[in-house]
Length: 150
Image (tube, rainbow, N blue to C red):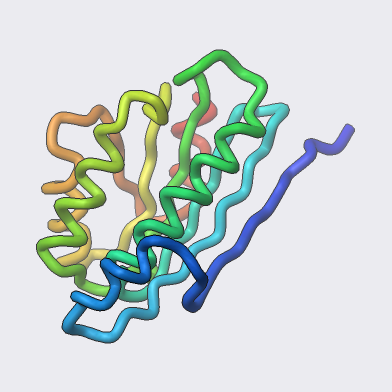
């Protein structure tokens, strides 16, 4: 039996109230992301790439809410795998925004894993995780195995 996996992908600019915030971004942004949900396994897979400005972050938050609405498990009983290998070094404002996103109790994962390369981006991630029980891995296979308890 195949698991139903729903994928949503976003890149580029769209219309939203975040356009106003994006006007204050000094560096061009190219943040993109995909979010997949495996409903049967209560698993959310996220891949992020590029440099995220306020507009990109707002699009991500909105899309995350839409994907989480598809989950059928109890609140906070899902697992999340984040592949950040394509992320560029982020601004301090972006790191602070991601810290707030990760701290939002409405979307808190039962288990949280990150796939990162050995760069400064990993250091930024650790600052953003501040106090979260999460693990970092170098491959998606290792991260998913840990999430699923293998």
